[in-house]
Amino acid sequence: MATLHLICGLPGAGKTTLAKKLETELPALRLTPDEWIAQILTDVSDRAELDRLRDPIEAIQWEVAAKTLALGVDVILDFGFWGREERKEFRHRAEALGAVVKWHFLVVEREELWTRIAKRNAELPPGTFYNSEEEFDKWWSVFEPPTPDELESNDPIAQ
Image (tube, rainbow, N blue to C red; front, side, top):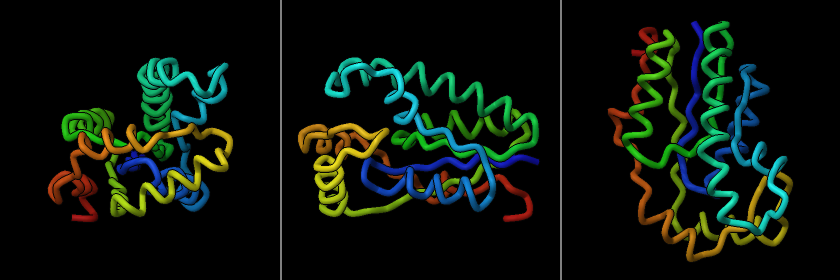
């Protein structure tokens, strides 16, 4: 039975770093939207286009993930999963495919997150984008941290 690993947290929490680590350790297929968006975005400072591309890229990545899970291969979705409804939806999607769900929630204090983002902004590694503190504050205010029951695995062996 394949496992869907869902990485939850805000920018700067270390989601992609963890996803890359899991990708090699498990092994699993890792899907990180920003990396795909960076390949097609012509102007990395165009926030409107970046935001417009996110939903279609995540939808395509889910299609790839679903087919991969059906083949029995583990998948890592590095989407952030900021809202309860989104987390619930992806859990149901995975369960409908017969996949095990494993959550990875990265808890980092606000000040540390902003410190990491500011440092990343200064370097902007490939596949990353500049984030203002104003944007970050907005994201911080809308993020719904998962509750313990949301993070429970549906793996019958783990329960």
